[in-house]
Image (cartoon, rainbow over all chains, first blue to last red; front, side, top):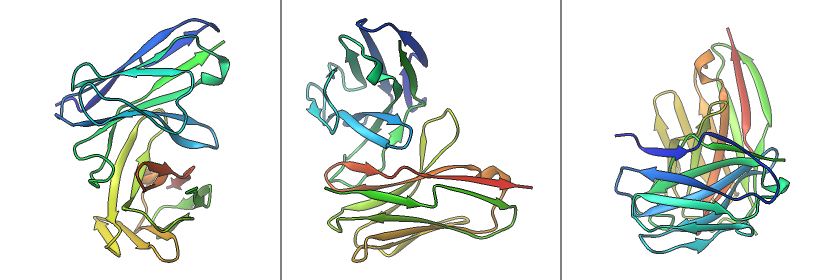
Length: 115
Length: 109
């Protein structure tokens, strides 16, 4: 049982390049989330999904797109990377979701630098 | 807008001390509050979850309390150890998780 895994662990991009971050969970969780963590700002929710085939915007969605084609995977895409997207990105999953008051399980993070 | 504040931002203590970490939030309409631990370069690990109807939760040397009416939670760590060194984050659950910026704890031998 690997829990929540993220690929890649590190990435350096040039401004304007695109990339996709992959999150996978093997706990059969319905809900999945993407956060970014920046110094002094805490974790902020980018997008989330309440089930396969669904996605929704979080607090800071601009510049990102997501897809949930399979229940176990949640992809975060940057179409045209900007230096402001330099951050550590965390994926999380939970069984019941926010209102269901279930805890979230986090992946180890992806450290992204945009030059 | 819900805001979560954690005080202090950093704390350095000798091994064996009992610690209190504070978390305050501006809107008492929450479903629950969670405390997480984050080690450097790692993800978050959930420590305790307190439902809005509860007053406290305990796990080993950790005890978390919640006073929803005053918008406060505390995380009590008994008999601190060097292995407790990490950043501790609290998060309130409205319809999303709103995180504080954390307390960075260092416990030295």
